[in-house]
Image (tube, rainbow over all chains, first blue to last red; front, side):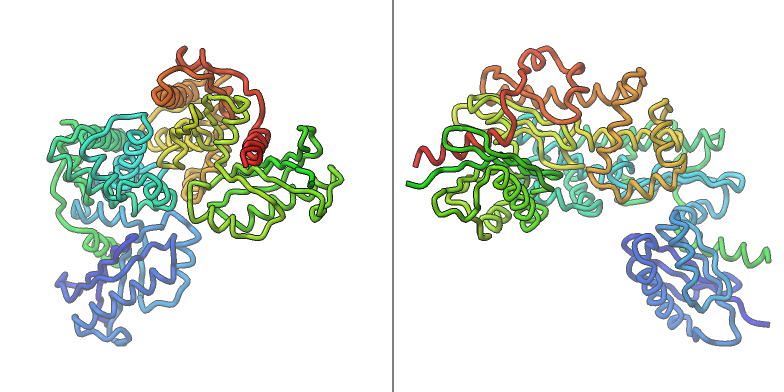
Length: 294
Length: 294
């Protein structure tokens, strides 16, 4: 009988994280690689995955084509909301005996609550709320930028640009934070406008660092923007609670999350729990379950 | 002595309008062509300009290389805020004895007030406020989308998408207008999200038609969005008034303007005056002045 080896993989817009475990749950290796967003590029996603896989299998001292093992991969990737991207991704040749492909939010939620029911809210460049409850998944926000993902890094950075432009042209007040944003563009309105017209969500998100920095100095506009962001995250918490009809534990992820917590309402704050495991571990729960149920 | 012929040209993101007049101010011809935004493409701008020029000169029975005439062109083009684009544009070969190049907002303001001091606010896909006062020009907003141009067509369409997503995922209420937006995407959340992730400002602006349609039916969210848009336009009116230290006549332009007027404050409403002339005529004022002052 062949030996089962489990791969857990979390692929996002900027990086891929991968774990290798044996059937008993021993960690054999781990690795990181570049982006794996299948909406943006299926071939780049496979490149990143193979890069991380080769590196982690080497650590584990496993040959990828060893005929005595079965490789089972659980994958949570960004972009799985596009059915055509999933189809294209799964049609490419790969060394896995079995694959389970879901969204990166799904495996993060599975990992955070050790496979039990629960909510997560990821507040990074974008914002997504996700729930697994009685085998039903629900998503709140996470629909993209600039039309959604309110309260995340890209949204905060764009609001900072808006407020700076409003101050500059006489529609709004200034603040030390806005002066720092303007200084970032050499106090040159034209330079800022040219930049903003080309900026992607990740570019706007870089400015969120300036917004959060000035919160410590009680900057009134930083405070205003983080309060607004908190309201947007509260709406996600309330929407998730409507799906489960009861409060579930909720784990927060993402670089902006810690700055938002002080601005959340008690009803959501009281539900916040440290995550039990990270997303690649959630991907391993997922693939183990699929293989066991066969 | 050579005969002077004046060309007035208004080039925007979607179309170019051109007039030909003789030295006495008689209209000899007019024509339209495609976009002339020099930020997006200098060569396309020149293509559109030459296309309209040849057509209008044909009407005027003028040969472009007639050695007995001098062609003088006043041009208001989108994208002149980019100095490099202006340089590249002016370095291309052209048949004009003289050129005066300014922004499309400048010539619209000049035309609207017959060369006298005044304000304009253009509420189309984007939003820009512009003032000419005692030979000083001021701009308020018009800095681009999605980080600015609040209250315009692209902004309205994006808010409609936001509100539809919020209703769909449990963060907000529905309304007949939001149902119409969702129906526009075959009531398919995935289809709407894929569209929104690729949408440009002009695409979002197409949805503004649905927002304004439902205003007539007292749709609560249409009403809310147009009230918010009105507030943004009021801020522009107030900022312009600060620059002139007194109320000037203000002309409104753009496809969304008429829908916003009911939501403006009296201080701005009382300043609204019909425009006296359109933007190509403003471009002719500009080039005549330059040639006369030589």
